[in-house]
Length: 303
Picture 1 (tube, helix red, strand yellow):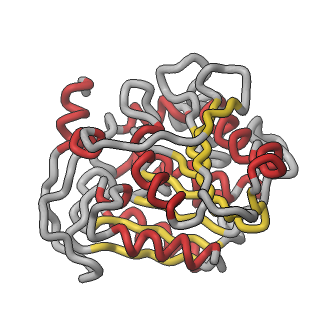
Picture 2: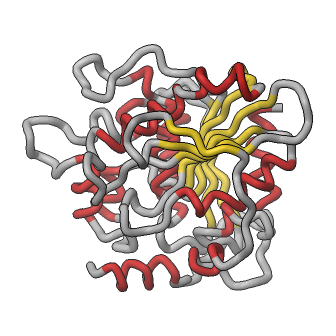
C-alpha cells in the first residue's frame, strides 16, 4: 500500500453503529491532519533517554509545587517512521499538564528508522519508561503514581510496557526491574497483534506492517507474538482501561472489546469503553466531546 493510500485511509471516516451513548459527538470525526493543524503548546523540557537522536521524550510539568503523578504518553502512527510522531500527543499533554499531571511524552525508533522494529522499538519504550527514575528527583515526579497510555500503535506499546515483568528471560526484550505502573489507558490501541494482522483493516498497511514490527510468523524460529503482543503476557496484573471510538475504522472497537474480555477472563481488572460518535483521533483531542471520559480514566487510576 502506498503512503498516499495509507494517509487517505487514516483520514477517512466510515461510520459504524455506535455501541455506547457516552458521550455523543455532534461533528464529523477528525483526521490527524486536522488535529495537527490546530495550534499547539510546547513542552517544558526535551530530554534524551538514550544515545540515538530518536531516543528522547518531552516532559510537561504543572505550574504547581509538590510531587506530581505521571502519565507516560506513547504516540501512534502505525509504528511507522513515515507517519507523524509524538507531536500528535501535544494537545492532550498540554491539557493534562493543566490538570496537575506531569506528562512524559516519548519518541521511539519505528519501522523505517535504523534499528526500528524488533527489538529496538520495544527496548526504546522500556528505556524511556524506566528513565523516569532518573527524572523524578529533579522534576518532582511521584513514581508511586504512574500510568502509561498510548494511542493506536502506542496503545499496543502501552499495554506491552505494563506487561514487561511477564516477559520470558530468554527474550531480548527482557529486563529487570521494570518501573511499576498503576495501570494503562489504551486509546484506540491495537492490543492484539496477531488478531489485527489476521483480520484488521489495511489502514496501517496490512499484515506487512505487523511483520515489519515483529517479524513474519513462522520465521526466525520463534513465536513473533510471544514477547510482543499483550495477550501473550496476560495477566498483566495492572488495571487496564481500553477506550475505543464507535466510528473508528482504523482500529474498530471490536478489537479493544475482545482484548478486554480476554484480559478480564485471565484475572485482570480490564474494562472496555466504546464512545459513540467518536472516531480514531477524538480520543487524543481535548476539544472533543470524548475527552472528559478519557480524563476520567486517568483520574480513576491516579487520584
